[in-house]
Structure formats: structure tokens, C-alpha cells
Length: 477
Image (cartoon, rainbow, N blue to C red):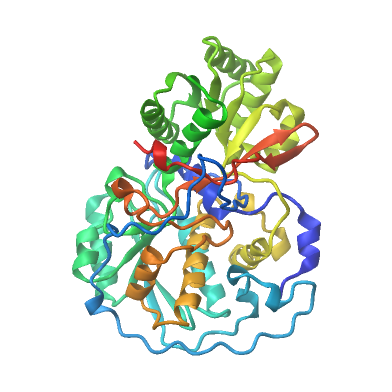
């Protein structure tokens, strides 16, 4: 059951495995050779506001779905047992669908075999945390309702960034009778093999442009959507005509910058770029901020992360630069804010939102604590890296499966179809709208909105009014 004491004792920023971590993916995995850095996890809530914000129109019917005539047989999901009586301030009757898992009994239906393809062991492509966290989510669901009453078995296969490895894994997992494939991080998914086997594919986020309109669905959009949302804010919130970009000269930042520049060009916003090292001295960060501000741009966009967040925030403040800065949610991490304090005034963070912790945070902690060998309250969601996005993917699918089970058998195909065609779905842990097929050119992407927050003098990071759910759709190159 929920522990209300844990809720009140943390009071940090809301968890949003999708919004924050997909922004992080743009920086650390977008170039396919980055590290599994930790990322902030703060909750977003998709609230329609003004012209920047996504509407909730129906799903575009151009989304390609597998042939349902060869759906894997599945037993009727059994009803879960009556929820145990609540012992704290959060009663089951008060819970949203994404919060109800602690009240569910272990599933008793036929086992659902799910393939997991993930990159591990290769230089720059070593993300075992994704597999570990997805497996932890499956273990949790096997004690709390499964996928619509069906226990889960993960069939894992590791790739190394080569097309041959991706093809071999596709053949291996389809040969083992999986009815759904999840993509952690895979550069070259063998969509042809999955399609031929009538096995649907659902991924965390697209990595390369070929994924954007593939025969698959991705709950987040990676570089293309996160950078598009940043440009939307620069254009419509700050009315910027010129932008200065500051970033590290590494593959991840360069990939993020390429997507950013494409969206800036789409919006007709002039831009200049300044490159620095991964780790600069204080004087080095000051020099970068001085250089990017020399042209007096309307907005500065920083793609630095981790120590670079602290360096660029301090550098701007020490030089007295008052040009507003947009950066990612990585720089709104509690450790960064505690370090820089009011030097962060004037900074806006993509993928972050102010507020208190939510019951989903407690579920996340309960999921990953056994895998880490620590107590749930010791789990720091900001240190989960890309694995946190894997948890959010699995838990979102579980929410959809529980709803689907009230209408139809839960199979890999039926779940895929439900995700791709059902309006009004939300992402677990964030509440962001799921809008698969909203963009014809990016038909495999299901999420296009991000919250934005700003630092408020005195130590708080608060949601920017009107920027609760900024859409990237009009800024996709």
C-alpha cells in the first residue's frame, strides 16, 4: 500500500519519467554513442493552453499496425482479487488508473511473453540499466495485476549497435514465441522480421530518423520532439528572432543540436552556435557564456548537462548576462539548484514542472528498490538514468492493458492496436497525452508535448503558466 509518510517526507519535484527522460535521451543517446547519465524525473500534466499547446484531436489513421489476423492466442484475463483495505490516507477508491497497482493481486492468466531488445556492452552503447529497470517493472507487475491479468515473462536479447546483431535478436525473440517486442535502445531494429512474424513493436523513444515512420510505436519522440518544443517556447513565449546555442562538442550534444537547428530553421529563427568541452573550468564556462551572448540574441539555448549546468548557470550570473536561457530538465535537478541557488534566475527548463511528489513516485521506488538492494525511500529517481524511462514504458502499457481487459483479450497485437487508436490515453507518471499518429511524417511517435518550468528566486522550480504542455508538432522539421 501507499506510504503517505514517504510522500510528505520527500516533497521534491514531481516525477515524469517520460517528459524529463526523453529530453535527456536527446542529449545522451541521440547520437548513439553516449553514456547512461542520470536524469531528472519531474511530472508533466498535459493541460491545453493557448496556441502552443497540443490539442486532443483524434488519432491519425495513417499509423501502420500489424496484421491482427495472426494475433497470439491468449486466455481470458481473470479478474483481480478485491483490493485490500487501505491503511493510510490514500484509499483505492481515490486512485487514478496509474496509481492502483499496489491494490492488485498477482495475475493468474496465461503468461504473456514479451521480447526486449537493448544495447549493452559496446563502447558508448552500454545501457544495462534499461534492461534491469524493465525487468524490475515486470517483476513488480507479476505481484500486482500483470498486463491486464496476465503474468509477464521478459525474453531479453542484447544488441551492440550493428545491423547484424539487431537482425539476429529479432529472429531470436520471434522464434521464441513472443507476442510483443519492446525496444530499449536499438540503433537498427529489424522491423521487417517483426512485421513478417506479426509481432508488434513498442519502443521507449526513436533513435534514428528511420524510426520516425517505422512499423512501430514510440511513447516518446527523442531529439525531434524535445528540441521542437524548445523552439516553440523560444518562438511563442519569448518571441525570439535570434538564438544563441551553447553546447559541449560531443556526439550526444551534437545530435541534439542538429535537431534543434532543424527546428529553428523551420521557425525562421536565426541562430549562432558556440562549442565547448565536456568539462570546462569556471573561467571556461564564463568564456562560453560571454561568447554566446556577444551577438545579443533574444534567447540562449544551453544543451549542457550535469557539471555543465552548474558552470553555465554560474558563468551567466557572474557576467551579469540577463538574456533568458532555455535548457533541459537535467539542469533543474535538485543537486544543481542546491549548488547554484539564485544564479538560476532567468533559466527555463524543458521537461520539468513544479509541484509535490505523487503516488506514482512511490510505485517507482517500490519497483526499483529490490533491484538496487536498497529500501524504497532510498531510491533517488533522478539517478535512474534511462532505466526510468523503461519503467514508465512498461507501467504505461500495464495501465492500457488493465483498461483493455475490460473490453477484449489482452494480447500483444490488441495492446498495440489499443495504444495506436485509442484517444485520451495518458503516460504513466506524467499524465501527458498519448497522440500516436498526430503527425503524418512522424507516425510512429506517440508523444509531442513537454512541460516547462522556471527557477523562482528563493529556491523553487515552478511551472511556467501557459507552458504546462508545450506541443512540438508545428516545429517538427
